[in-house]
Image (cartoon, rainbow, N blue to C red; front, top):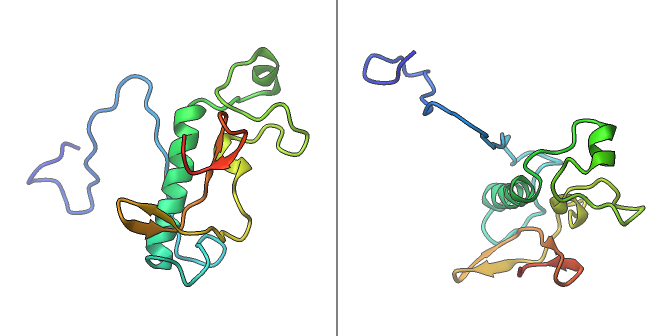
Length: 131
């Protein structure tokens, strides 16, 4: 169905996608088990959404095509994955710094505080908020 005035209100209009398309489907995060701890700098919904979007954006950039099979792992057909750690083996970059109870210290970006997770830094070999 083409988008426009004749399209029903339930129609989701997307551009025609061609080539290698990368996307992430983000669920509603303000539910138990999926949201940051409260109180949070903004509110649970805003900070939880910022946390998940930053996590998934880093993973989409560093590992756009995760290995589909064990053979992919053996042949190196993947982006960034932890391979030198028994504890973190096979994890994507966003998973290494993930805290299971979503309790992060607030981070200030453009003079506004958010509760987001740090991401793994190859430069510092630890979780960091700077590249």
